[in-house]
Figure (spheres, rainbow over the protein chains, first blue to last red):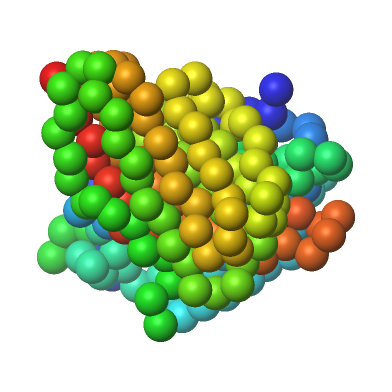
Length: 111
Length: 116
């Protein structure tokens, strides 16, 4: 059974700080998704990556396949970045429709 | 540009009642999913579909049924609702080329269901 572990569970930052959220995953996962869930519940896909690094605005996602580890970085954090960030691993092989979700990291950015 | 539309947003059911959560997408995505989200837990897959006419069970299918008669629609039916089905339900869709697996997901806004 695939597993995805996120850390930290909770993170509080001051506006402007650089933020890192980590995700470790088990063998059998071929790609990593990063999702954002705002209070009120809507879920938005931020990135899907299977190698290297992706950047969108102030968000950067990296993945190290050898170490089975991915990070989500937020530069110049802002209170509107406050949300739950979820990583999810896509199964490899015949179950590649399936995602295994982490429990999420609750980020609070204070002004 | 509707994306994934889920209805209803909120519903309260009595034990033993049945209901259908509706999900429609307008992006011509082949993959569709139903997840449930319980407090403090990761999203769990209930059912999924890789195309019209094809559905299969996920991790937690008991007490639910689905159908996929068209590419656009993927309704989730709860039969004989139980308190354990109190949760937030998310429908999602993605495009996946054959053999390559699912790509970036688009989620519906969620449906909060309470069974009393």
